[in-house]
Every structure is written in structure tokens, then in C-alpha cells.
Amino acid sequence: MPYLGLSPAVQTTAMAYQDLTGGTGTSFTLDHPVGNAAEIEVFVNNVRQEPTVAYTVNGTSLSMTGSIVATDDFYVNFQGKALVTSTNSGGGGTFKGENGEINAGGGDIFRVHQKQLDTNTTIDADENALAAGPLTVATGVTLTVTSGGNLVIA
Image (cartoon, rainbow, N blue to C red; front, top):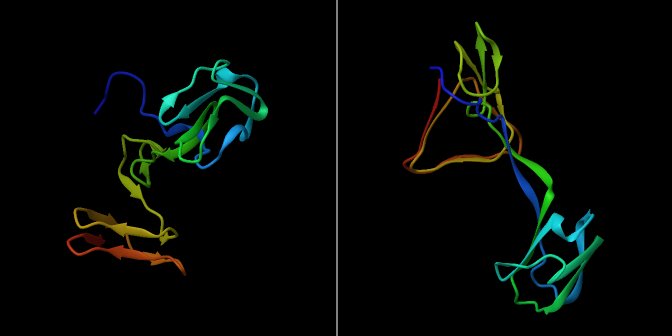
């Protein structure tokens, strides 16, 4: 079915994050260098701190104007450092057929699945799952179907 607007995103992103909880004092080392204080968001006990007033930054050196105690919930979001967090490939597979190979939405005649499970997976009690078979589970990988959950390999 056609739709209005842009095609759905193939990938979603999130900003890089660093948890500094447990640290004490006013000086901290960041995982990623930044050019200025506006490139990061600093939070203390879930309250965003004002750049250049509550903190300054130089490369990977973060300096707070107030002292942080170990019990503070203290973290940094890197605004300029995007990370790919997931890929939308139509639910974990591709579609093939008259439209070629499609990785996102829309579909086609054939749905293509992987033949081997390489990641620990649990089908929860409130879930139904379907996989095209035959399916093998890689060595050291666990597939769990909890009581009430359903897995069909067709």
C-alpha cells in the first residue's frame, strides 16, 4: 500500500553516552574528545547542567564548577557522536521478488530468513514467533521458548 511522506528509516541512531556515576571531585575524563562545552549535555541527578557555567571541557577533560559526590547520578550525552543502534530490515529479514531485494518495509513475494541463529534469543510467554526452516542454532547459543510462548518453524 502506498503512503505519503518519506520512506521509513532503515537505521535508527542514538547519541553516545557515558555514565560517570560513582566518580568524585571536579575533574573527569571523557570517552570521546569534544571541541566545546555545547557539544555535550551533562546531567547531575537528572538535571541538565549549563554549558560553560556548570562545566567546561577541553578535549577529553571535563571540569565541573561544583564537586560531584559518589552518590550523584552523573552522566554525559555526546551530541555530535551518533551511534547506529538498530537496523529496520522488515523485522529481521529481507524481501525478494519482482521489486528486487528490499531491506526496509514494503515487502515482496519472498521473505528471506537466515538459516542459523547466532544470538541468544528468548521467545517470551506473550509472544508468537515464526521462522523459515530448517533452522540451526550455533554452538554456545541458547534458544529459549518460555512457557506460554510459541515458536513455529515452517
